[in-house]
Image 1 (cartoon, rainbow, N blue to C red):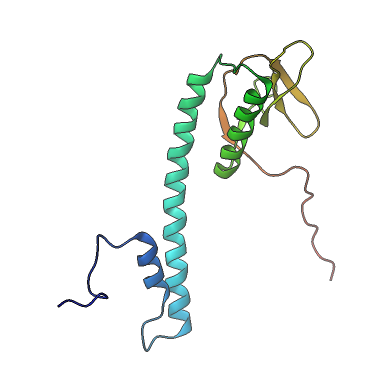
Image 2 (tube, one colour):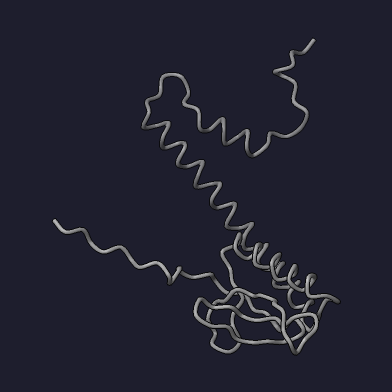
Length: 156
């Protein structure tokens, strides 16, 4: 009878391979183990970059289909904007503001002129837009956080 440790139910998972690669084989030193760990991290990073690029393209296609759409309530429109921003944050992306061309958060908020709210492009210091339907959205890189000041060199 085959032992449970030798039986495999299917192909080895990526996580299992990475964990195996991280552990130092008998007789190796810490530097070799660190190099193997670093290489495993690089492979994960490369796979994530490919996955993120694919996800960004998929989101772009979905946004093309959403152009001109609007839900039947302010809450639903706000939920669309929140979900989109959450996904874009994970991918390191923002919506490109059609007025100034800068990366912006896409938001929906109450408006006295539109009962289901208005969609805006929110920047840290201003907002642009104000349409009742989802405008054409293009995706751009999030870019650096401009609110944070760059570190100054330390004085000796």
